[in-house]
Image (tube, rainbow, N blue to C red; front, side, top):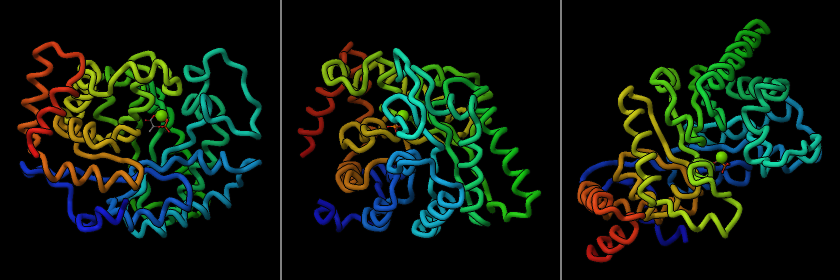
Length: 324
Ligand code: PEP
Ligand code: MG
């Protein structure tokens, strides 16, 4: 499939109206990294670090992790890699950790909640990341932040770890960027100060949609009921875009919908400027973006919203068909 899009691989995702959308890829295993060159991605917009923990049968050592992250940065060859700290719990249970018996794991003790309550593993991971960067830039993103103080606390952990590393005489990263995933509706309504403090945000659409519609992302029966192009969901995304723009915080969208051409195009029309997706989706998404005028599309979306449609999909697909 990538061959089909080879001719645009090194071209930007610039729309007919002249807007360029940043195309990034999702990764998690070493095997994903060769795709960074092959897909034409600008960088890794989401590196799911838990995958390395999930494929083992015991907790990895700090030195192993550090060597691995260093290899990731080597193969990225100067391109930005957004390392998301451990996102475990819910559907991602480590075989060597005591499972906790929770009635609703998706709403349970997971991701940053574990990282803050039992900071040992997160500290070890942060240390491994700092050592791997070893004078290079480092980008860290905390998953599943639901309220401002969770971000502040996670960031404080990172700052403490940096201070400790410095004392130990380790070379620090040349620059550190710290961001959060926006995967719970609550964070979209966080105080303005949060949007100012966080250096970047990435919308985790899989979880955000699940919690917005109260529909399990793993449950086909309910998942399909709610279209990603549902007006309510688009309104939420648009509000997040506006809040980020107000304070100049950079925003991206990761999660499976970023890799679906029609969805990606609609996100771009309402102001998303960076997308992160599986490498094989970059060609198809870019190909469509290069053929659309976002301002025209925006009018179609607005008209559909105004007319009370539940989803803008029918209007958008009719418009797209009329284009070709
Ligand atoms: C998401 O929730 O959209 C996301 C990117 O994270 P994950 O799919 O790993 O939960
Ligand atoms: Mg998620």
